[in-house]
Length: 169
Image (cartoon, rainbow, N blue to C red):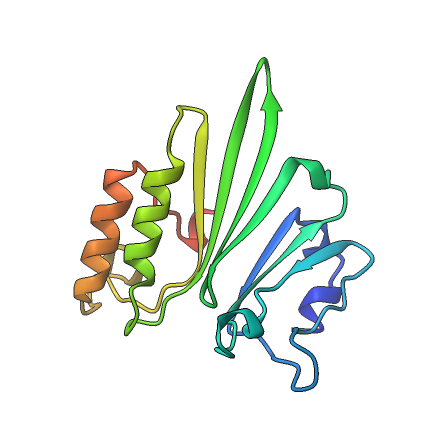
């Protein structure tokens, strides 16, 4: 992780999303070697009855802090809202950073949050994370299908979100 967050190509990103991070035993935080370029958005375990956080975002300091807000939904789910102008009308981008523990209801919470936040045609959602589910839509024809993956795809369809795979980038 330290090498990754020191890579000049990585540090060009406006937002970096991570999951399953290293936890500092002495301070409620994670590793932050990009202090000069990015602000760490790390849900504190102390705010969640000591449950370790499994998500973090790094947002570029070039993005005006007045244009974004950060919401911690759970130790496994955080939302970064960035408001930007494109033409005359402002746009809202919600970046959902998730670590999906399949024994919890993170994906149900995601679906509910998107429903609450999708109020205008100028709202976009980006879901990133470690989803921990298998489906042939992203794993190939021989992949076994998890029932939660079907529910996730139904939610994606309901909210008109497109599925992007790494090879599509």
